[in-house]
Length: 441
Image 1 (cartoon, one colour):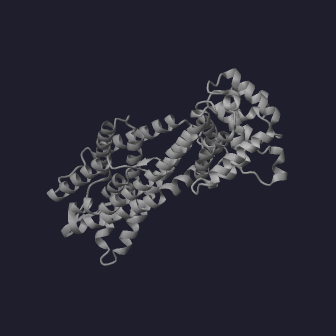
Image 2 (cartoon, rainbow, N blue to C red; image 1 turned 30 degrees about the vertical axis):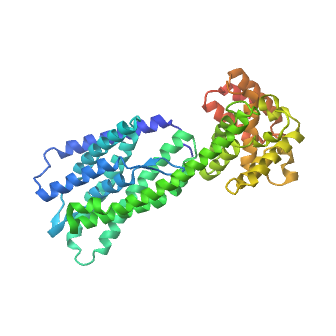
Image 3 (cartoon, rainbow, N blue to C red; image 1 turned 90 degrees about the vertical axis):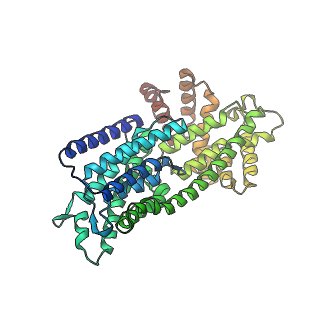
């Protein structure tokens, strides 16, 4: 199942839901706020300041989006904290948690956007509000045998282990809900299958999400012993984990930049038209995602597409326009084999060699040569399409290109991959529904 709404529509829905939650919380707060002691005020301020500042400490997870784990942990801990030292009960209502988190998250996100010179993404704040609302409701409103989880903490005596377990379940459900919302946004933006998007998000952020969950619980429990100082103190381990994750993300970014630089080699040498490799990579990823390939497979497919013409550097004379589609099948195989040979000498890129080499195998020959990967079949279609269309993507050129590829579908090109290409082009507005019907795919 795919999310049929656009990414912008999903974001607007999330912002609207979060705004309604905050508005409802404000209405419920009127007349219910009671005087609190100085210790509770200090705790509230500590949480709000920590949430706002933590919004500026972000990390980009490979194959996922930018996250603020410290802010998430602080927000969830704020929602489930039950007591201060000397058995002073924290009695703030869910509405206070929701409104406070919304204001702190908005202020922190606005500061981050201004500092980084980026537009504000209100969907991030909206997701935070929804997640915290769920945690606060589960911990402070939903009754368990006649009392809420927070109310029952004072009555457990020495059996406090189950309190930690219950808080971990509540925090885990809240952060798991965040992963689900991120998956819906991802599916809407990329047209990926929702189940696949959820699995990819869970795989990408799962370890960090588990660390964030446990940190939120530890902070909530530690406040009962150490007071407000426990909030920043017990966030330090998660901060160090963020540094490690950021370093790993930096290494992967450097690897991708190296691949992009190599892909420009054929452009700068005059073997291919400018931007050809990047366009083929974009088509390949869009087709692969439409066909349900995993994010890891898409990363390799993108890298192979960027380097698919590397074998052209072995030619004595460049092909006119760099279009391998215009060469003989034998020359296509030679170019692909030369590129694969170059990649196979590099440990990090050797896994791409087979994909690059098999791009020259005609679909009709897959039964004779063995199984050709979906990545190679996708790359073959994407490369042929860009060879025919070029950078301008004129509507008439797109129609002629798809008609030509349709004539060779099932013989030279995988018909399922070609059908996926047509869906991608239709979503991008390059093909009309009537054009797709005429192609009879």
